[in-house]
Image (tube, rainbow, N blue to C red; front, side):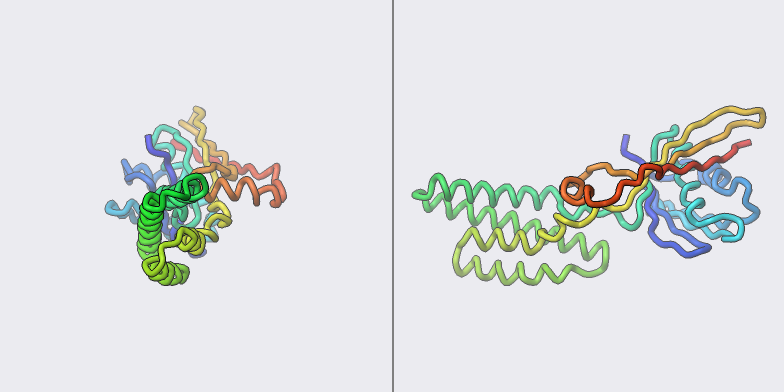
Length: 250
């Protein structure tokens, strides 16, 4: 089963838009779970992109608790499966294609060291590495345009380096292109995320749901790996970061 997650796309003190990783199964019960003891709650679900718009009274409930309630409702209708709470669009800057491109550069570099006499093979490997790198750069640019409406300025040096490679085939040009495009993403901090786990207990009035919310340090991509190895150790450890949210379902 695909991992469940909710992503906070936009927020205001009395309004929040959240994107679900899977379609909502029962909007009526979903609304009922979130509203619970609130007097007013505006609820609008978009079936096309799985996004949920909520408007509420800040005097009744805090924004963060509304977000937690969405996570609880999402978990409940999916069999109490844990839910990841994400801030902003989830985006993997170091994609598999860019890692394959880096591997091709490494293979070409290894061949250059141990088999330098075969210039024809080396030239073919350099061209292949450049092709993979150009493909990964284009994929990266497309992802940035789709996510933000524009591409990073770091894409422009890649075009100059491609022109330089066409003039003179050099593996170092390919490596510089890869580093200028993806180098900074190796040190991008892991996306802020929390893990919400829901537990159900029965009482005289029905069911009670208790959710625990903890910081999530799951490693899901290469950027996360680099950040956890080299940067997380410099961040003070918060030992008591667990939170609890309780909802009753009569």
